[in-house]
Image (cartoon, rainbow, N blue to C red):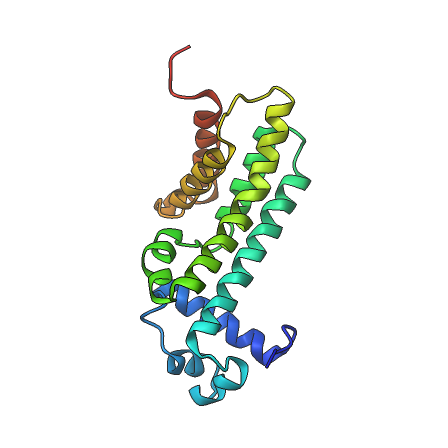
Length: 195
């Protein structure tokens, strides 16, 4: 059965499941936990996810990756047309979102999903997070602004480093995050070698 994504109850279930999966990881969350979070019996969740927790997890993660694709693409589109401004906009958008915790997703959660779902989720994540940045980097390379040979590696490096920013103590607030993003972009653009 296909549930309408606009169904309010299904949306609440996905929101609650997303919060729980993000905080605890796939294996530590039960359908009972999700049901309790939305005040419905866990058995009722099978109406929305006949295949159970795994189906909910896949729906939660695909929704999150799609939101990230749209957010990254939108940030790039709203930025000035230079790669620094685009990276800055993407960095600010990413740190304004809850952390994806991709290390845990890849190392722990996907192992529990079975190989078919793990491959599907990995491809979805890889494409959603990487493609918009690769496109921006490719444009900058064609215009002669960067000489990056491996655009995929550049995009993934940027995303990984921005994810690390989430773990920096937030005692400095937004100004500290802005400084980290600026320093990260400067380091990536200029490199580490003395000129």
